[in-house]
Image (tube, rainbow, N blue to C red; front, side):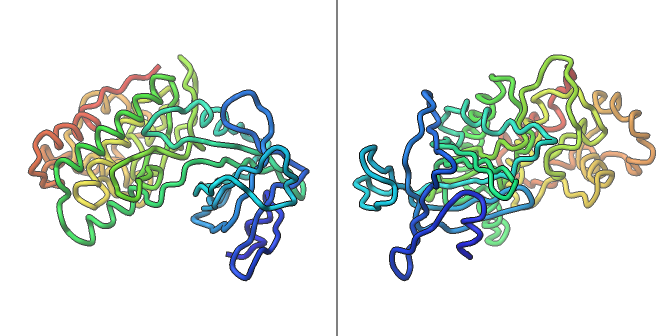
Length: 329
């Protein structure tokens, strides 16, 4: 990675040797811990490497050191052992309300990634939010990809373990009346031994208010609940349950459960595999169902798609998708 990439939003740099750069927070911004009181701390980030990035943000891996209070941050003899962390930087847009910091600070659960520190930095008239959090080397997408390439069905105990952890984490979020709104394999992290699962990325999350109106064009297409596709705006946290069901199905087969290359085709993909419940029929007139659904649903096609020998697992996926009750606030 180019050092200018790491430097452009939050850091200054100093070369220590031929392979290591120490990245020091500048005086123009301060770093704060997750827990109150909001008193600034001195940290040092080194060996920064870009992990991923998109239009609005980037994620880096780094080694973190805490600098003792009595020590000037321009000196680099840190006494604390290093800790590998993830640093997410997000460009803030004044036209949109960003709830990520507020919601991420609230999270305290073993199946949700934990924030350690945060900072905000204004540079070149752009404001960036930085979130320093636990680092996990794998995500669920890598697990699914491995299943698809190796064509080996995961052990039932592994699938049940992931299902339990995912449901446990999403239940914690929903008990706060928060909807994640972007559950997908890339937003589910795994530990190096693949035993611990943690939900991450609350960039789309929102606290849902009774009778509130929310945007329906949310969540990645393959994991988007039907009520979102047809434009319902008073949805509930149930849309996350649909997404979780899709992810768990993918964990077994290695293949996306509902693959559509457009919004209308996404709905066709769903109804080609699922028996159409009355609750969905009631929603469809909003979007002219005759143009959306050209083929009748095939009863029992979900089990055929999964070809799953774990009956209870299929039942769980069904309960989380088309048997899931649709409740509009």
